[in-house]
Amino acid sequence: MEYKGHIVDVLKRRIFDGALTVEDGRIISVRECEIPSDCNRYIMPGFIDSHVHIESSMMMPSEFARVAVEHGTIGIITDPHEIANVMGEDGIDFMLQNSRQITFNFCFGAPSCVPSCGTDIETSGCVLDSAAIERLMAREEIGYLSEMMNYPGVLAGDPEVMAKIAAAHRHGKPVDGHAPGLVGEKRMQYASAGISTEHECTTLQEARDCIKAGTMVILREGSATKDYDALIPLMKEAPQSMMFCTDDCHPSDLIRGHINSIVDRAIEDGYDMWDVLGAACVNPQRHYGLDWGLLQEGDPATFIIVTELGQRMRVQCTYIGGHEVFNANSFLNAIQSQNRSITTQMALLDNYPNKFTATPITAEDISLDLKPGDHAHVIKSVNGTLLTGHEKTSVSGNPLKDAAYPWYEVQKLVVYNRYTPGAKPVVGLIRGFGLKDGAMAATVAHDSHNIVAIGTSDEYLVKVINHIVEMKGGMVALCDKDMVDIPLPIGGLMSPLGGHEVAYRSKILRETIAAAGCPMASPFITMSFVCLPVIPELKLTDKGLFDSVTWQFIK
Image (cartoon, rainbow, N blue to C red):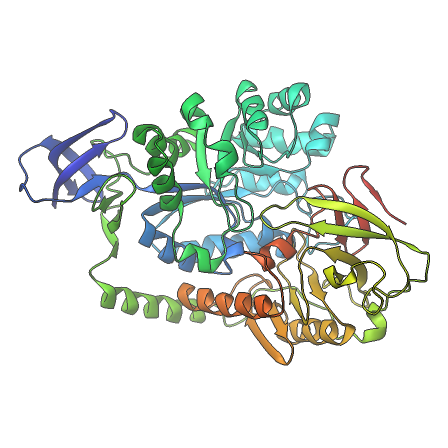
């Protein structure tokens, strides 16, 4: 098979008119030749997401891939951290099994921090110790050790943490980082443990310190956290040390665009096209030792065809291993393929893999005893970031009834352990979601994925939490009398439905919670991180209110 067009050779940084010859899924020749003068086909390497949690899309791996190829994504570096927190190695096996159902490039990592903190801080469904990591590192399907979130453990030389890193190095596999705010000598120390990437940089200085320490910086432009504006100047300073990722990508965002959106924006902003394409296509393959194809002779026949280069780039076709996996002009075929996939997946999911023991609650279970003059700790959540603030205030009474403080800005936050029979909900206060008349709840709650809910009344909170219990996992939005949901029976994280239907349902959820007063762009993703104690400053776990700066619970 021969493909003619304008060949975009990112490695040699040149474009020429030519043809690719493909046999048995490999490129056997790349030659220059004449092409029609009106040809607008540019043939180029596909895009790679260098750090993403598939589970955050609420799609199975096969459906995530089916949507991603529409945007020219040919592969992802993916951390099954979320399903591992629910089901351990069984959850990782499910992700691997499902990924084999589709033609796509997956590089799965072994989650390094399950749970993200010790079991004395939060309750997760499983624990992956260093022995489990050793087993996973020995598997050919596992390409790296996923984000090492326990950076205090790295800095302290914790034996269990260092054993996990050593297991990756013994098997010749890289280690991803996760150390927000770490700069200077501590960044150097963290990197010297053999950790080679960072996707949590939110300032240019952090990123520069990472590069100084020899660390690749992964610019994140996800649904809830967007670091493009802060980090893109680095493209002029050290493009060879940059990659792109979405990290947590909401389904309604994924159907609109993926890594291609970051590429388009960077080129439009005037950054060198070759540097941008290097970060999107080349650097991930080099860093993770992947052979996914870069339009060279002998490479896998994995590439995309686009209409133009630059800010108006539009994907026409995506090929992986010589197979056409997306064609913008073959919509009917795409629908038929989608139907076949859903049928296949449903056959595999006679018994949805899950772990869920929570039972219904009552209003009494989430009562909050506050008296006039009491001091309350309030989590301050901000749109567009996973970082939270810590506010202290004197109250006049019940925050859902009294108004001495602007309590209309504050709601109850509930975290409910779904793994331990007989567990009781934990209640806190949160500001920033802006709810006026409604509630929201989900089992997508990083990283242990217990039930998390925010609401303006106990009645609403009980209603949405008990609906989650009834579904054994999912997302619920309530505005006045209107309640909508997405059942997520796969680990309480993913749906067996097609990607576009999941995206549509998530859109309805977001619209419903917006009608209840929430102004956030990605309210469910933002809510999912108010439980994550490794990201500063104040969080709520199923064991209490936790200050991640002092690393202590607040009594």
